[in-house]
Length: 392
Ligand SMILES: *Cc1c(COP(=O)(O)O)cnc(C)c1O
Image (tube, rainbow, N blue to C red):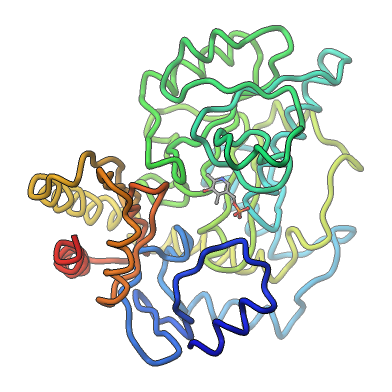
C-alpha cells in the first residue's frame, strides 16, 4: 500500500489528508484493503452505500445498461431517466426532476431555479438567499456561497453574492433577514458535515409558514440525510411539510455519480425554461439506470423499517456509551445518521478504529458520525460498539 500511496501523492492534488489505506474491494458491509485486511464499514462512502457494497441487483442493472448504451445526450429522450424521474417524483411528493452529476450541482441548480423564479416575478436579478451557519452544500462556487463555514469560503470570496446567514433552528434569526429581495431559504433538513443537527419541528414548520406568507422558496438539502437514512424516505416527511425544491444525491446512485433537484409545480412552471440550464452527462442512461434500480430497491424492500429499528437500537447503544465515557459530551441524530460529540479531537479514535478493522468518519474535528449502510443489523451495531468502546 505504501507504494501506491507514494505514487498517489505524486500525481493527485493534495486536497485531502487521507488515511493511509488503499481500499481494493467491498462486499455488503465490508471493505477490504490492498493487503487483504477486512473492515466493517460504518461510513458507507459518506452516506452513499445504502444497500452496501456491490449489491447484486444494482450491479446487474448497471451491467445490463452498459451493454445497451451508457450515454446519449439531453437533446434526446432515454427510458432509464424517465423511469428514475417518475420514481423520484413519487418519493418526494414534488413535480419535476433535473438530474445532475453530484450534490453540489444539484444545489447549483436549485439556486438558479430560485433566482429565475424571483427574476420572472419581480423583473429584477437581485434575489437574496438566506442560508444557515454551520451548513454544508458543496464545494463549487455557488454551493460554497451558501455554505455556512467561513473557513471553507475565505480564500474564494467573493462568492455569488446576495447570500445571508441565519442560525439553524432559530426562526427569529431567519425572520430578521427577510426583505422584499429574499427569494429563497436553504438548509439541510438535518445538518450532516456541520455536526449532525436535525431541524426542529418548530423551526421547519415556522420557516415553511414564513415562506408561504412571503412567497419565498424553501429549498431543503437532503443530499446526506435523504434516501431513507433518517427512517423517512426524506426527512421533511417527518414534519408533514414539503419544500419547494429538494436536492438529492449521495445514496441516489449508491456509488454511481448522480444527483438531482426536484421542484414542485409552482417553481417548475415559473423558473428554468428551455436553454436556462443544462449538463452533458446529467441524467444519462447509465447513471439513471442505477438510480432507477436504487429507488426500486427502496420500494421493494423493508429497508426503511430496518433503518427505524436498527437506528433506535444504535441510539440506545450510543447513549450507553455516552454515559460510560466522560469524554463524550453530546449525542445527536436519528435513524442511521447519528453523531457523538467528544471534548477533544476524534482523529486518534478513528485511527485506532481503523487499526481494529472498523471504518468511521468524523464530522468536524470533535464529532464521530455514524452513517453505515442502511442494511446493517443490530449485531453489526454490537460489533461496532465493542470495537469503538475499546478505541475510546
Ligand atoms: C455531500 C453534500 C453535498 C455535496 O455533494 P457532492 O456530491 O459532494 O457535490 C451537498 N449537501 C450536503 C448536505 C452534503 O452532505
